[in-house]
Image (cartoon, rainbow over all chains, first blue to last red; front, side, top):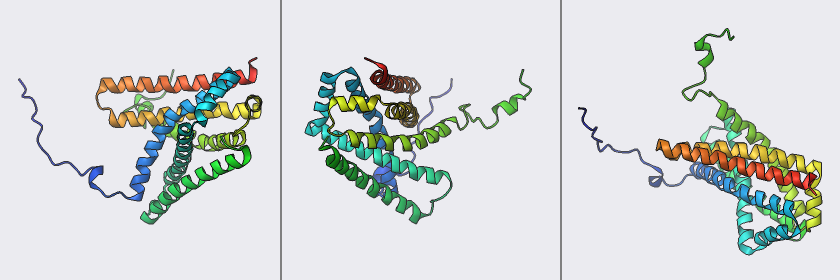
Length: 135
Length: 126
């Protein structure tokens, strides 16, 4: 009979918790997190479309939920996640071509991602408030 | 009858037997999402604060309904592939992984078809 293999206590390579955060690492984590958030966030878009398709009363219900301060916060977060994941995606498409792998380029792209996503989110909401008088 | 040798048929497909299929579809839908999400944000900014009649009328127009349908298709394909990667990274038990991957596909298809149905109803429905 074969013996049950004994799991030796081997040292593990250092994991996330041991490093001080670096910008490219934070952006990598945020890219996955925003992706997962957008996954669930499709329910928001679906709810909006279904509400609109069902009728005025149902649409008002959906809009009421979105208009609540908490709903607005979720929508604001969703907008940011959308922009962030989009810019992070552009970064990945640049990397796919084999370009942008110098440390300074990686750091620059990372900073552009976060600065860009926050700026675009604020710009989109500002535009929505100006044009439509609020969500 | 294929004239290709068995070796030629499997070459480049890797251990999962699908080669770069996942990678390629992820990139393909990434690029289409890039365009379509910009459209969605523009649409939402324009519709902020609009009344029901305006929203309904706007969404029913082909120049808005068609990009919306494309976005739904491209979006759920992209998110299903992305979530598949997350599941394969973190769920190591084979049984739970298979269940999670199935639920992932169900969710993507459900959200996609329901959203598409809503858009089509706005365009064609009473």
